[in-house]
Image 1 (cartoon, rainbow, N blue to C red):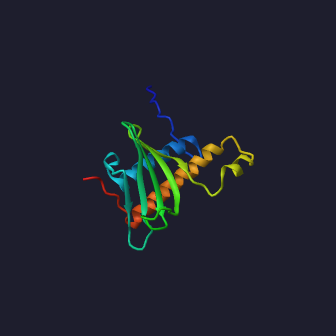
Image 2 (image 1 turned 45 degrees about the horizontal axis):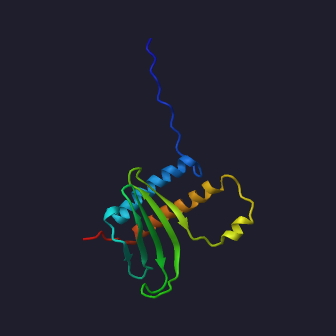
Length: 154
């Protein structure tokens, strides 16, 4: 009698798990590609506008053969003013070879002094990365639904 080998059962990635975070990085990469087009062809700075919506500023902060680092934010005041009110101020690193994108820095509502005075769990870093990258996913989806478009350079 022949016995068939069964493929191991693959469980979906759980929220707030490392595996789930890696899946989220891949999803964010795909969402950014849909929003931005060719990431390597983006101009260094641009502003996307939709009627009666806040403009979204995109800056390419760093380019290399394997990564691109983007800064994304809403602009709450005129783009030409010296001081601008911006949020959420996300710094996103895109890994071209791994086809992933992750939030590497963000401006929070509280400062570092508050964080240092709080007892932190060991998995706090994973939870923070999960929350910020989930926010990026939702924000990109929202921007796409609202019709924001970033143009490639000519």
